[in-house]
Each structure stands twice: as C-alpha cells, then as structure tokens.
Length: 252
Length: 183
Image (cartoon, rainbow over all chains, first blue to last red; front, side, top):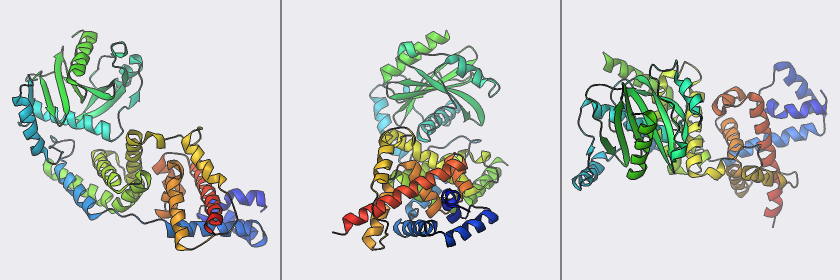
C-alpha cells in the first residue's frame, strides 16, 4: 500500500473498521513508512488523550429516580394520560383563583369526564410536540401539500386552511395519537407561539368550550362531523382571533 | 387484561432503555454542556421513547436510545441556543469555530500533563456539535461507524469524514496550544 492510499484509511484503521486484508496491508505500510507510521502513532495518542481528558458523565441518581417516577405516571397511549406536571395541585390552586376571578367560560380540568380526558391528552400532545421537536411530519405552508398528506394515514380529512393572510401561517401537519388513534394535527404559528389544531370526529358530549392547564389554553368547537381542538399558549385575544379566522375559513 | 399488557410493555421498555441512561446522559451533557439541561433533555427523551416504543423493533437498543436523545438535544438547542445549530458545511459560526480550531496548528508534539488534558477537554467542548458528537460517540461511547450513522442519521461516509475532521481539528489545536502553554 502507498501513502496516498494509506492516509485516508488511517482513522478507519485505528477504529477497527477496515476489512482484514486491507488492515493487514495497511499495517505493513505503517511499519515501513516513516511518515505514515508516526502519523498513526500521533493519532492514537490523541485518541488516548481524548479518553483520558474527557470527564465520564453519568446520569445522576436523582435523574434515575425522576425518570422512574415519570414512567410510573405514564400510562401509555392506550389509556387516558395522567397529569404529568409535578406540583400540579399547586398550580391547580392558582388556576382556581384565576377562574374565581372570572375568566368566563374557562374551567379547570380536573374531572374524569370523557371530554376532560381527551382535553388532557390533547394538551399533553401539544406539549410533547413542542418539547420533543416533533412539530410537523409534513412541513409545508401549502395547504395543497398538507391536506393530501393525511389521506391514507388517517380516516379523518382535515380541511386545508392557510391563515397566513390573517397572521397565522400554516407550518405543516402532523399525525398524533389521541385515545390510541391516529389523529391529524394542523400546526400554525401565532407570533412566537405555536397553535396545534387537532381534528377528531365530533361526538355527543363535546363540550365546545375553553379549558386551560398550566398556561396552555384549549379551544374546542365542532363543525359538521368534525370536532376541532386548538391548543396554544398564545395570548387570549390572539387565540380568539385565530379561532374566528379558522372557523371563517373552514366555513363553520 | 389491558393493564397487564401495559405493565409488560413498561417493563420491557425499562429493560431496553434504562441500561443506557448513563450513555444518554453523557451524550446530552456533551451536547447541552450543562448538567441541569442534560437531565431535562434526557427525561423528556425517555418519555418520548416510551411513547414511540411500539416502533422499536429489536434493533441495537443503545443506538435507538441515543438517536432519540440526540434528536431531543438538537431541538432543545434550537429552542435555547439556536446560534449553536449551524449546518457544518455552510459558512457561519460553527464553521468559523471549527476553522479557528483547525487554524491553531503548531508543533507536532503532544503533552500529557494534567492541565493539558483539561485543555483537550475544553477543545472537545469547543467543537461544533456535529463534530463533537462523533468524537463523543466514537471515543467515549465506543460506538462503531454503523451505530454512529444510525444515531446521527447520516451516511457512514459522512461519519468517517466528520470523525477525521474532528480529530484533525483537535490535534492541531492541541499541538498549537502546547506552544502557548510553554511560558
């Protein structure tokens, strides 16, 4: 083997990634060559240096405990999700005060009623879409791209609505699991805030109101046989404007 | 018995994921460069992994876990330190930093003193994320090329060139700074 063949293979050689024959002929070259030999040695020394220099970080015990506790709370996608935020009771109290102060149709989600379960799942999904960096499966501001993407992936066909002109550009679409079923979510931006609109089949008992939890607000309305569930931390008037624009565009 | 199936699913998840919690934390710590942020990102990633556990199919569990952790790290960086997310091959800060490291060439000798190792640690921290992560995955987590490709979602050829680039940068900077240190 010659130097020009050997050099690009040095890393792979030291990483044990070369096939046996190649490895043997490279090793031979390193023994002979006055430039490649020391080069390989220096590289190996750097590798040893990196291993010696780099602190070996280990997950703290506290993190182990936190994760186990979080998993205990997690009940999986097939069951209704539990409250995930620790200290929930503490801010439930503050929300109650907010409600007492008269925030209109807003009420705190605590009951076991079906719509509350869905509402909680939807807020969870919204949070997860923000935290996990999984905002869109199909990133497009073009409603003609987003709408067909859902076809075949879910039985529900959300309307393709772009509200860029009204100040709420469409960012794309995503498929989430709500009650264990794939559900389309349309993703919009309102200033610095994200609005997720989940589309579920409308059903009896839909509450058609506003709910909130931990700074996130849920707007729910139905149109035809579809139920819309929009979640965001956008300011209330901004959010109301969005709902109005969306309903107008959807003709609902 | 839904709860029984759920319990089985959960214990299988714990068996697959929890053994790699240290590796997950180490990667997150190197990418976020902060203890508390690394812990938050790992917790979030594990819950996300749990949610998508049904999509896990008998592959290499460590790569699967690290891939999810890495993705969570990058979205965390996007939200909190967007300046650090610069495509490696585009002109910009990340590249300038890499090139600054690369430019700091010097004598071809290596020191082994303690402070010198500390400096090497800093140099690794100073690498742009795409170079830093291949060093961490290869040298510290001892993943092979195929696993690194799986975790980072790039072809093996890209893994090789990034690894080479990262090592060249570190070597030149390490060698170069040695001269300054000799005062």
